[in-house]
Amino acid sequence: NAGVMQNPRHLVRRRGQEARLRCSPMKGHSHVYWYRQLPEEGLKFMVYLQKENIIDESGMPKERFSAEFPKEGPSILRIQQVVRGDSAAYFCASSPAGSNQPQHFGDGTRLSIL
Amino acid sequence: GESVGLHLPTLSVQEGDNSIINCAYSNSASDYFIWYKQESGKGPQFIIDIRSNMDKRQGQRVTVLLNKTVKHLSLQIAATQPGDSAVYFCAETPNQGGKLIFGQGTELSVKP
Image 1 (tube, rainbow over the protein chains, first blue to last red):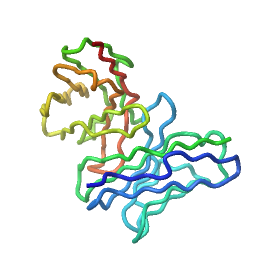
Image 2: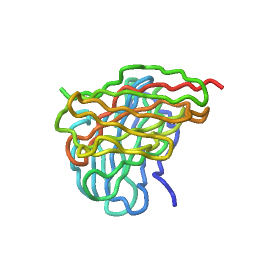
Image 3: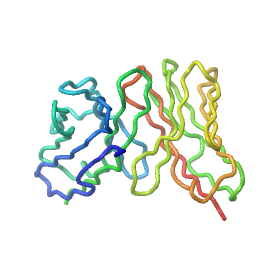
Image 4: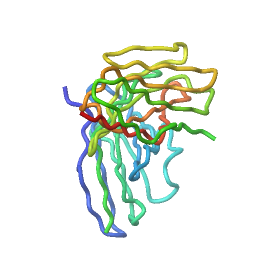
C-alpha cells in the first residue's frame, strides 16, 4: 500500500534552469496539495489540485511557478528560471474526496539552486 | 490574518514522562485540525486529527484537546519514548478541506 511518492528526492539546478517535481498520490486519493518548507520553518501552502483542475492556487508565486494534475500520470510542480530563493523542500500531500479528510505527505523533494 | 503558532519552540522531556505540545490558532472559522510529526529528512506524518465539534480525541498514546473559546490546541503524548523525538506541527483548515495552515513547529527531544 504505497504512500505518496515524490521524485526526485534531491534536485540540483543552476540559476535560470527549470525544475520539475513529480508527485503520485496515494491510491484512491483524488486531491493533491503542494507545500514549500524553508529551513527551520513550517510548511507553506502553495496549490491544491484535483484531476485536471486547479482548485486553489492562492499560495503560488505569481510568476515562474505552475502546477498541473493531469487525467493520467503524476502531479507536476514546475519552476521556471529558478533563483537561489527557490531552494527549499517541496512536499506533496494527497487526500481522498470529501471534506475534512487528513492529508498524507510524501517525503519531499529537496531543491538546491547553485 | 491567518496564523497558527506554537507557544514553545523546543521541549525536552525524560523518557517515560508525558509530553504536552501547545498550539494557538487565530482563525475562528477553522473547523478541522491535525497534528503532524516530522522527522529529519522526511515528510510530515499524520498523528491525529480533530473536528471543531469535538473537544477531545484519543489515539494510541496521544490525545488532542481543542479549546475553541481561547483558540487553543494541544497534543499530549503519554509515556514519551526516544522514537517520539521529532518536530511536531499543528495545522488547521478553514475551508472544510483544502489548504492546511501550519504552525512553526515544536522540537521534542526525549532524554533516555
